[in-house]
Length: 211
Image 1 (cartoon, rainbow, N blue to C red):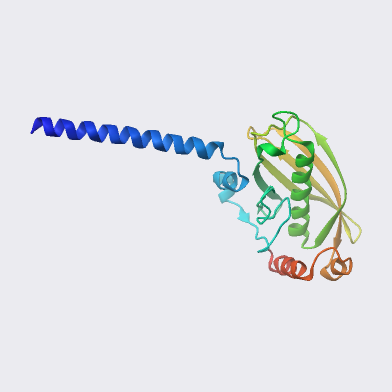
Image 2: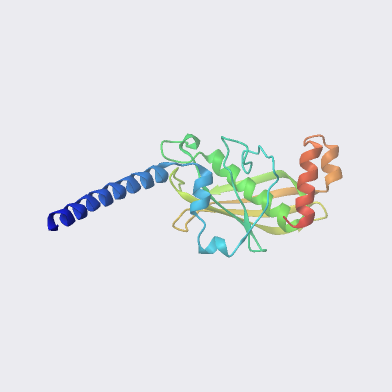
């Protein structure tokens, strides 16, 4: 009887070890998987849970925020009602020099966070008129990033000055941006013929509902 019990516990220990190794291997695979959507879920931390996630339209192929773009950044946005934030982890094919993130990707992230900040905080459609970017620290392709945008000031009736900031997982400022954005209503945007009516209508409903 003692032999049977000892054998049972030995088999149980072997099973527990195998399960532990499998779970460890599975975790390693997930940690090496650099898909942005997974990393956004990983960053559901205390800071993020105190924020409100902004809604996006159902069908969106935007490189920055479109869930339907398989090669995009898949950015999601959160707000504390004074600024807009996003947590991003970029995939390896978006690198520049070796392990560094491409400067064009950094610029895209900052343009996107400023755009969504303008749309949400000012409740207007926007188009980017100009942006300037200061690269403060190297951004590595493995960095988990936080982008923040806020309204700087309004320039007349139809322009806004927006600020953007990009931090690494140590909280260090890696890049900052300033942008001038043109504000417009849905009729003006529709008259330009750049966006289809369906997308304008969906975004218009989001803006009116407060996202």
